[in-house]
Length: 297
Image 1 (cartoon, rainbow, N blue to C red):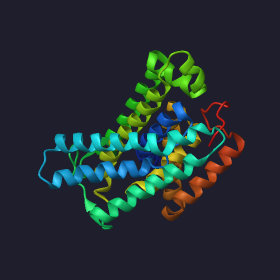
Image 2 (cartoon, one colour):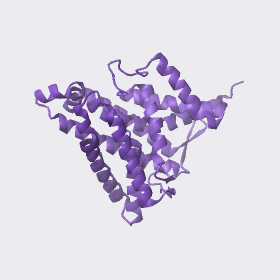
Image 3 (spheres, rainbow, N blue to C red):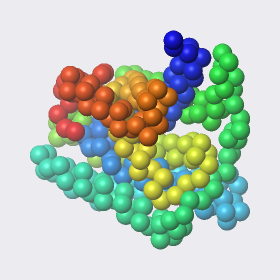
């Protein structure tokens, strides 16, 4: 007989864990919308912003100042990534060199962080909720920090839907994504739109790092790599380029992981989840809410 209480705990915990993947998947969408490029340095951006913020805190700076400086730094790195590693390769539409270049930047940031702060995990202090803060929900104790991430993922999804459908900037992003050359002929500053999309994606990665780090309680140079992979799976599962797909894909992946962990084995969480993902993609390659117009990735 199914234990309803246990099943409910697994589902709600899975939704909360999946919101972490959704938050990362939203960042992938921002650069994909304008350049059809998936930034595989996104996980390292996430880690580097958290590391920088922690370094500023250890220098004695207040939280707000440390976060501000961390965000400024990761924004500048986002601009450098777009200008140096992505933009030159966009001259060759059939080239997939951006996979290597963005992944290379991510590995460089990881190696740089290891050189500066060492390979050992560093304790990351909680700044909104402590790891012991829980919220009761129908007899289930849910982590307050996880709920904060869940609310952030919902809020970002709504904001991105509004921007893309209701604002001039969103329409410009769609135009640049469809045909950059035609967008330029129509008077749009396509390069500026691309640069801003990378800045926003970097800021989203930084936000994700600062929200997720307190959940783990510590961070290390390889902090973002595993999360990036799962965030990418969430984006592909939901339909890359879709905000609602990013949210749905992340939560679905989180729930599958927890159900497998609860009823099969925690060591099989990722393996079975990936197998189910492959099955779903074999049936619907564009993802659950993706567009069939997607050609890359």
